[in-house]
Length: 232
Image (cartoon, rainbow, N blue to C red; front, side, top):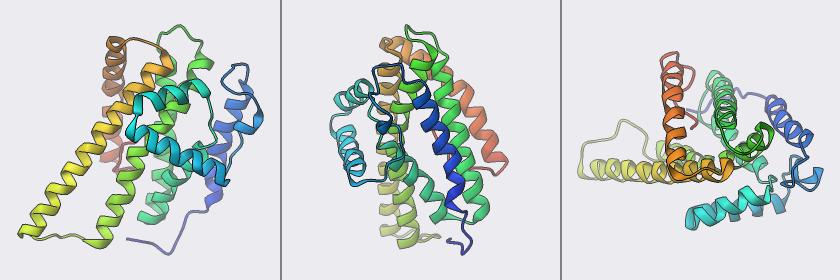
């Protein structure tokens, strides 16, 4: 499960730097007030912001996502992408680590770019920044699923029995995964709603278009063995 070979962490730097530099270059919006909010921040303050937003999106997703879109505070994104990338270092060999991170980068940029190009009242740079900020926060359910699945694998490694306890665990795991998926869909809906500022029918229409383009891409990655996990 865990390999002694590890992909150097510095390979993540170009990805994080690209996102940071793009955001800061287009700082004409009122969403950001200073370059401080754009820099990679592993401080305690940014970690506290991450935890608060995680709890907020879990308990009051509508209010929290709307606040995230309005404030434009992005210091917690460092932790979000750090924990997303860390999973691949903990869960497989160097091939899975490399392709997992590459897939995460490509699918994230594809998703953000797709919604940024859709019709709305905002300009494309404005939409790109808003979608990137809110879309990044939809990774919270994915991160939770990553680490709980890894923990379950270590605690109860397969093959699992067909005993009563084995069946109970399977039912619990399926219910847990479905609840995370429901949370994920809620956050994606709110991301589109507040980033593009469109009504509910257009949100649903945009999301269907996104799935129509994304599902073949996920299947392709799965068939090629590049990634078993779609980063939606």
